[in-house]
Image (cartoon, rainbow over all chains, first blue to last red; front, side, top):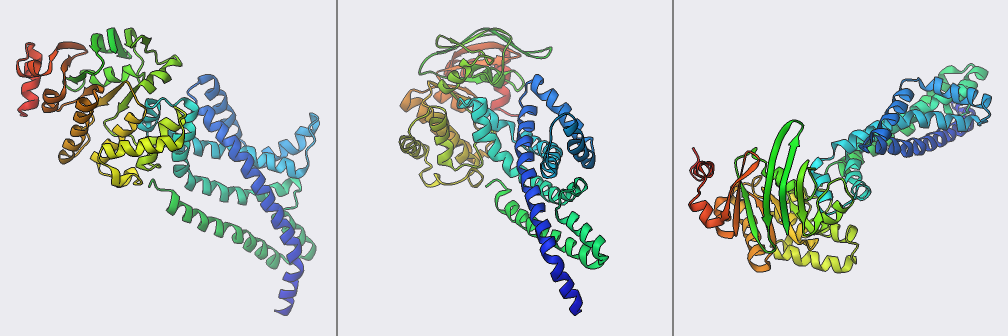
Length: 218
Length: 244
């Protein structure tokens, strides 16, 4: 038992360094995917076919490719056409692009779920498209979108482990390396799993709280 | 100030309005009545470009209403609308609903707008409810907020699209009396799509009877409602005043 604690202690700093990188990858990919997702959603709900159709094609393409393949593509293929990326950058872009599609679809559904009467009301007081979006549609879509957005965030956090395949030294990667050098699979992977839970459980609780307090129209 | 000239509107191949000629003068209250499906709401919605039309024209003063042109936004600030289902912004208080247009569309100073919006809510009898969200208001109260929101734009005219049809019967009166006040005390120009024949008789200066996409009869309110000449009007009035 004593040795278990001391082993865990010796793994701790390495796994925590991986944990920070996991958080960094997740946050960066979340920002990228949210911004891009908002762009996709705006273009798709623009009512302008020249904008909506190409967006749909891009989104369907990206959604149809596994994350691993997207990551390999960005990390290994981009340098061949002269775009050098660090593993971290490639990981963030790959995850961000893939998740921008899921998040974009979530946003689109949220925007389309806003009562058309709201848009007419905005029009009837002379609001133009941009102002209607900003003052009427997005604030209401935000409430509708919050629960699925939270789900996406948790999934993104878990999927950030996939960037280990392109050698980003995040939590999963650190765990795998530790385990293969110590053969202490039980302790290492239990710790890795628990560390993920330390992030996902509070996130889920936080989302339930937000949903209960902001998710409904007052 | 609102003029229809041979205006036509169709949804696909279905002709809804088949050549409307009508006029609403400044300070007039005109009620638009007719069987459901006759095109009343559509006609109203063509005035502020919520619906495009295909033929003839609709004029607001000297301005042509064209939903595809940027001028439509200016027209909408000149002609407000009150909807059947209120369409208040659910995430904003009554006061914020009324302040929204003047602040963000007319770009007026928030402090001035707040004062005017409060006065308008007082005017429609909702002094106590300024900070309430729409969901906590009754239908009648919501519709009165919607009227205040329309008035806050200082419109030249207000379009009412069946403003009492979604209300419980006991709330119809409070909304109609606010509308009557607007007509009588402020000479507001109003075009009202309604089934409230009593209201039309007492408040409207003129009544238009729309049937199957055409104005079948029009005239001074009392005269038309008491002695309709057109057979369709007679039939319609008989049905709405003596149901079944």
